[in-house]
Image (cartoon, helix red, strand yellow):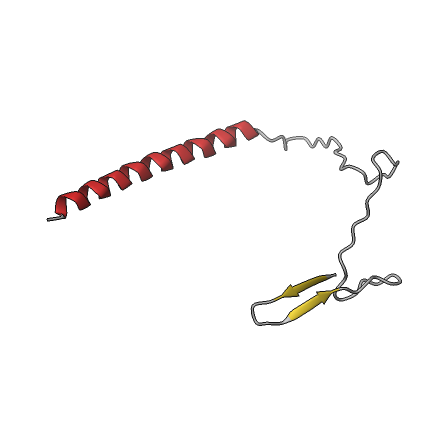
Length: 95
């Protein structure tokens, strides 16, 4: 049973079980577990190689990772410089 309370005080009860072929308005959470290797075709996501001419990706995850890392380091440096500069200015203006 799952209860969801909104900020306006309204509570929705997600407790209705599916019966027949139609999904209820507030269905109860449901999780079906199976043993590994039980032969279920939905055990793991499968990837099939798709090749379409002219649509190969030239970017690699490492390229975007290095860009994000570089921007993060630059932000830390700029933030540190501005923080130290503000602190020095405050100390000079105090009587």
